Every structure is written in C-alpha cells, then in structure tokens.
Image 1 (cartoon, helix red, strand yellow):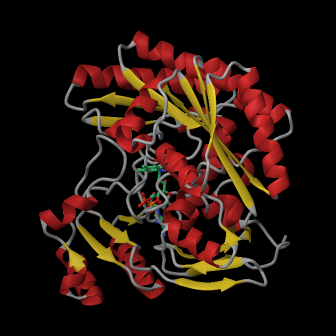
Image 2 (cartoon, protein in one colour):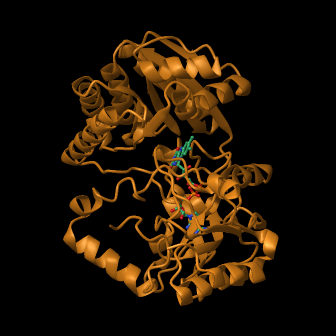
Image 3 (cartoon, protein in one colour):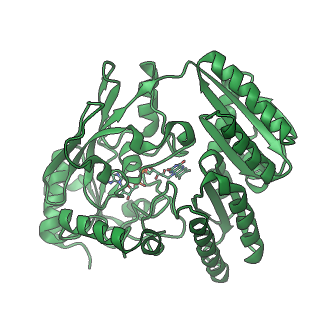
Length: 459
Ligand SMILES: Cc1cc2nc3c(=O)[nH]c(=O)nc-3n(C[C@H](O)[C@H](O)[C@H](O)COP(=O)(O)OP(=O)(O)OC[C@H]3O[C@@H](n4cnc5c(N)ncnc54)[C@H](O)[C@@H]3O)c2cc1C
C-alpha cells in the first residue's frame, strides 16, 4: 500500500516540504544497501536532526501503522536498511555530532550518524584508541555499527563493537526514550538492556546516542605480509602464532583470486601466490619487535615464500588499505558480487576454506575468499551476475551448503554482517525454538504494532 497522503502531510509539517524526499529519482539511492541483488522503493525519506524528530516520526508511524526503516550510511551487507515497500526511511546521517570526549573516564559520546572513522580520528587526536574497524569505516555510521554489532580487522585482539558500547539512548517505537548504561566500568543493576539493542538491526528501537569506551593508543605497531603456496600453510601459521601465545591485532588472509583483484585495484606490489597473510602486532615497542620477529619466524617455518615487513607507516597503511579494498576490488570484476560471512572456530578454518573451494568447483562458480583468519570469519565472495538466473540458483544452493557446513563445524551463519533479509531463512534452524520464541516475545513487547524494520531478522 503506498504511503498514505495524511502521513506524508504530517511528515512535511514536521520536516518542511524540502525535508521529505518523495520523487522517484530522489528515492532510488535509498532503495538498496550494500547487499547485492536487493532493491525496493521506499515511500519517502526523512533526515532526522534530533532525538525529538525521531520521537515524532515513530509516534506517527505507530499511530498510523506505517513501517519505518532506520538507515545510517546504507553499507549493510544483509539487507538491514533495505526499505520495506512504501515505508518511511528514517536516515540518521545528519545526527552527526561528537557530543563529548571524556579523558578522565576514557569515553566518547556521539550521535548515531557520526562515521566510524570520525570516532577513530577524534580518539587518536586525544592519544586514545577506538579499535573496531569495519572495512567500511570511512562511511559506515556508529548507529549502523551498533545496530549490526559490527566487527572488523582488529576483532581478534580487541573484540567487536559490543565490547566498546557503554551506554545507549534509544527511542522506542511508541516514542518513549530509554537510556541504558553509563560511564561506570562496573554496573550490574538490572538486565543488561544495552546489550539487547546492540545487534538488534533496527528492529527494537532507534539509537540516538552512543557512549563509547576508548582505550590508550598502543605505542607501537608493526605490519607485515607473508605469502604461501598453499592455504593450509597460512592456516597452520595462524594456529602456530596463537599457540605461541601471541595475539596479533590483525591476522587477515586473501586467496589468489582476491589477491589478483586487489593488486590490480590497489597496486601496492602484492606478490602472486596461493594465500597471503596480513599480520599486525601492536603494543609496547619492545613487545612489538619481539612478536614481529616471532611471527616472521613462524611463517618461514611453515614454508612461507617470503615475509615483507612494512618499512614505515606509509607502507603499513598501504598494505592495510589494500586488504580493506578486497570487497571493492572483487566488485569490479563481475556485475554482481555477493559477500558472505560464514564463520567457524579458527581451528576449522583451513577445512572450511577447502570446503568453499570444493563448492566453487561443484557449482561451477567463481568465488574469491578473504577474511579475518585470526577469528575464523570467512568472506567467500561470489562473482556472479544477477541477470543469469540459472547461475543465481547455483549461487543460492552453494550458500546453503556453505552455511550448513559452517554450522556443522561449530560455527555460525553470520560472524559480523547480521541477519537482515539475507540470512533470516537460516536463523530458526541455527538458533532453535527457545531462542526464537524469546526474541519474538521481546520484539512484540517493544514494538507491538510491528512498525520497525518489518520482515527483517524474522519471517
Ligand atoms: C566495503 C564494505 C566493507 C565492510 N566491512 C565490514 C567489516 O569489516 N565488518 C563488519 O562487521 N561489517 C562490514 N561491512 C558491513 C557494514 O558496513 C556494517 O554492517 C556497518 O555497521 C553498517 O553501517 P551503516 O551506517 O551503513 O548502516 P546501515 O547499512 O544503514 O544499517 C544497518 C542496520 O542498522 C540499522 N540502523 C542503522 N542506524 C540505526 C540506528 N541509529 N538505530 C537503530 N538501527 C539502526 C538499520 O536499520 C540496518 O538494519 C562492510 C560493508 C562494505 C560495503
């Protein structure tokens, strides 16, 4: 059903006639997110500038039973901010202020539209460190990161977004404001509702403020790459590094297909090989030097074809940026790029990578695989064409087998990209009846009219 005219008039009264996008050419950029092959037109787009704006939109939506899809930068990879047909898209990018940096408590309070890189840079300017670094950090918003509980390249040592959220302000679907968490390092009063909203994918409330934990900036960092003629040797290197009680801040891998695309795109002189590891260690300078030497030695012991240690910060940044460009680099070589994030315990990683290779052969598909080797988070990326229906059927069959295998190996259907639309059919089997029932009950309690992001996470 198209957006009702009286809803539109009320929104125009709230935001002004120019503050509500309704023409097809204005709506098209908001009709998709970073997920391939999914588009749907919203009824309108509004840009909130305050918590009060969000309260007003949600009250109106609940009263008129109008679906609302909250949107940050729209970089999500599971269809979380994909519009529901004729919904209101509630965009948070203009809620972009850093409200406070508290050096005594090592916290930063921000509005949801602040980008991840703005948080990281503001922390660094104060000699502090905000570790979560999704590959999209130059554009993704903190609101989106919290709603997806995003991970990143430093997850192995520093954890993920959830580990840095100390408090939230959330507008509930009826317009009430809920504040949860605070600057106390210890606080065990009541249920941890903050954790309920982290990873809730826009289905329980709209996050309007985030209180983030910062940590001291590591004094030194060393970046290196090691190349291998077999993925197993790279995986064994990772296992041996961890067994040597070294927890690097980054342990990323690229397979040959990805490597070639990245080098073609980033031109940083990456060698052609079967598997490449990007390794970073940070901390006290003496510890960093020692760990870097040990990691290089372990790579060589596992038959590495070569280890290259970045000579300076510029080279280190170029190598890390090359890894961050993996998805974009793969996206250049095929009309449709579908990036997955099946995740297994890291002891099963080599087996999982071999399985993905076998699946590529079985279904005659091109798959480039890269990811966070240190934490078992794999990104098999299908290079395909959504107009080729026969091939898309094979892609979906391949997905199913990959998810089944990940779960069989003790892993999960999504390590960081969320459920959204892309994984919702797999969720009940993965979580089981009890978890699904509790999740549905929570959703019904908080959003009885079902206006927030309907059709996401749940069927
Ligand atoms: C090139 C590329 C690399 C990526 N690398 C990574 C990576 O390394 N790790 C990783 O985890 N992800 C990665 N992603 C996925 C994506 O960037 C993250 O999920 C990111 O957190 C989404 O942020 P966003 O601002 O774009 O949110 P959107 O895509 O706009 O929204 C994501 C979800 O959050 C909800 N939402 C947004 N803002 C709010 C709010 N204020 N309140 C409530 N709900 C809200 C939306 O409804 C939606 O369900 C990558 C994506 C791309 C395109």
